[in-house]
Image (cartoon, rainbow, N blue to C red; front, side, top):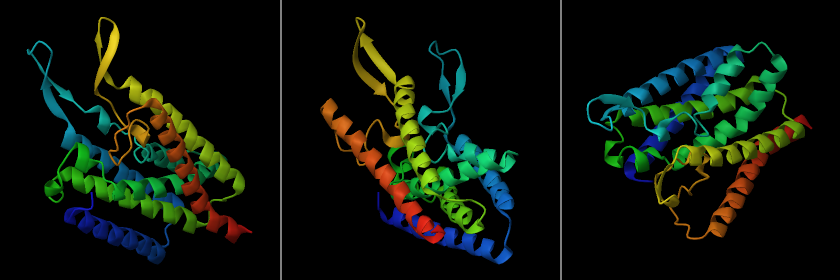
Length: 253
């Protein structure tokens, strides 16, 4: 994190966001057209990621080689699930639900993408900083998250979505609910080791929504520390949503 390759990528991402927002300001596309472009970028992003990380691994008996996509690359991260929301808001005919989803996407995609760019998980799980400009996965990661930031800004600038205290509170509740769901999901996708019916270790565990372990790598040694960590990230998530909504609520008032 914050190697020279990372810093260069952050600069490139800032330029991409500015370029996308400026292009939208110049051409004045509708929000529907913006969402169409986001769908295309999202599809190409996931396809690129799949091509980059899928691998052939031997079966347990060694007779076959089977394609395998590592569980931590499933589109279940806080930013990856935005793809589902993007496609839903683009193609749904229900205007009320569309606007409700967009009011949720604005702060979550914005904060999630900024956090992902600040602490790129790919440098910890998939590639090294030395591969930052040679790996296709690196380009996918930084371009996709830059798109999410630009999309969040354009959702607000479109003027088509109403933001209120009600939508802010609803967004906070949904974020908390998804966080709780991720605890179940991370345990479900884990690879536990049992000896005589007793759990002794976990060989691999996903970290969707960062509810399994903190992104800074701080080692937790007691269960109360994990509970405290959950309280902290929940409070920070709600604070981030609040800060995103404050200027919009003031403007509406």
